[in-house]
Length: 243
Image 1 (cartoon, rainbow, N blue to C red):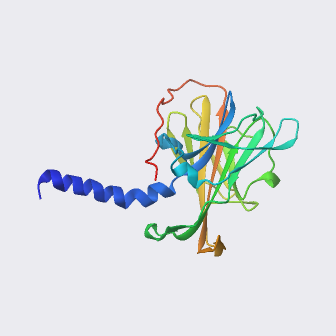
Image 2 (image 1 turned 120 degrees about the horizontal axis):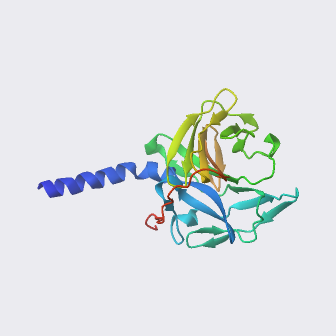
Image 3 (image 1 turned 90 degrees about the horizontal axis):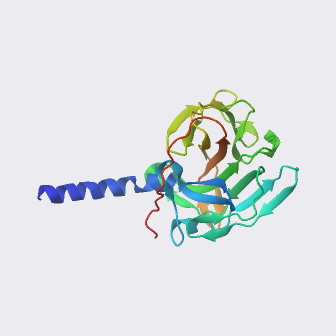
């Protein structure tokens, strides 16, 4: 085998070996913009937004709920577009949550996770106070202190779990939740940040006739820092190859 052929084979083997873990790293996150808002599927720190047709279509029907600044509860119907779900008419300043419970069971045995039912949660923090009673199954809630958040799972603080923060320039840091489920991050720039946490729950069940042995919960929280120095935001977003 020539050195060129050997390198090609090595690269191919590496791609195949990491593919399952890359696929499992995807999550949902919310963003607000002038048109209302968007829900994306991919990896924010990798500048990856999945597209339709393609892996975005693995998300069959996310549910969007809003608590407005006046305390009104409302739902928003997401519209599937090429690069994500458009949330037209999303009121500014409200607290927005997205849940996707219809994602199909996956065989991630090769990655050591077994047969898994993935569940996705996303939150966009506005100016509305949020109580622990309003938490999703897995959630990251602000505590009211700058840079401090609490991870909640099934209504109780989740301790020891790793939480990742991602800035708009793809800068990342990680922190482990303390005994109260709290983490604290420095926020060096103004603009958007996303928090990301994963919880693997050993729980058997069945979804659409397929048995699973664990549930993998993924949650994100998007928030905005209004003050601080500016940072360069990458202009190019990628998408994986449709399949």
